Length: 221
Image (cartoon, rainbow, N blue to C red):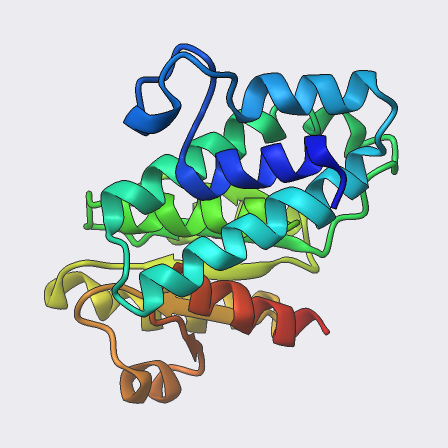
């Protein structure tokens, strides 16, 4: 890997956002993902290569470590923030076609539920893996999902819930959307959600952010 791409990879993998970021302590005062991404673009690297050769592999490694219990939410969140810092300079190339997007992912926390940490981690991980992400936020009504699907009919939808009392709303959302968009595919997740529950409501189960990315890749493949 070219030196500048390796630096971007390492910054994302270690959660080094920019030069002002104090985390991780070993890289304090040094450039981060933001600066190195800008430098790579100035050197003429293609935006797609920066994503595919540096950012996406780094987030894949982070996701694997998280799944294996080798790192935890704070470290994963910092890695996602570092990736987003670099990605902010890549996004302008999305509309031009210079960066090929794998697909579109609509995500939100279901209505009645105000929790968003898990949903936010999934959104950042998915975006860092090459998808266009439409984050609807928390307490999302069926109407919010339907409007987003009307504008992005080929999107895959992610539903998140942290409470047993709100996860049942996933079925309501899925059934309502399927009446209008019967081919829509869903990925569901959250603390109370199980593979069995996901199967019962006609959705794919996402255990954690890395698992969601892997399931998405299969669904769009």
